[in-house]
Amino acid sequence: MLRPAVKYLACLGLIAAALMLIGPSAARAAEMKIGYVEMQRVLDLTDRGKQIMRDLAAKKDELELKEQTMKLDIMKMEDDLRKTGEALSEQALQERVGLLEKKYYEYQQFVSTAQMQFEGQKINALKGFIQDIQTIAAQVAGEQGYAIILLKVEDVFTESSIILFADPAYDLTDEVVRRINSRGSGQK
Image (tube, rainbow, N blue to C red):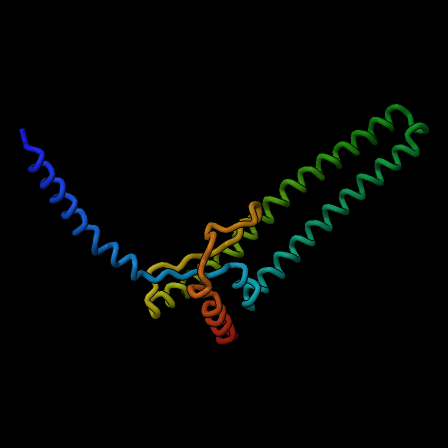
């Protein structure tokens, strides 16, 4: 059986070995540069981001207009049915009610499908843009010695970001915006 003093020395030896292994990586972590890029600002301040947002807004407006038109058609049919329903035969009334139900079903289907299609288009439009941001962030990281560059994106449901706090000194958004805009002007 080991004596307490030997156990104590063995524990100290293990702790020292662990510190020697952890020490260099902890020192590297303290020196590691971490930056971030704010997605919304990149969208707001780049020509391409503004165009993506205009295109998405136009598509959303188009879908909303079609939805409102369908809704108005249903309301007109309902109003017409209320006004003339008593004068219609039972068969004519059933036909109009059936047509109204069909229009309402089509409206519900359109709303559901349009919302999914719009979200898909939004994801596709942003996917390529985010890839460009990623490429530029990698260039900035290589040139300026950043180990990690995060993308700060606001969640529309919670109105918060995964990055809860970031010192503005590590904000690389302006550099990314400058490079995206200069890349865009060079392509014209």
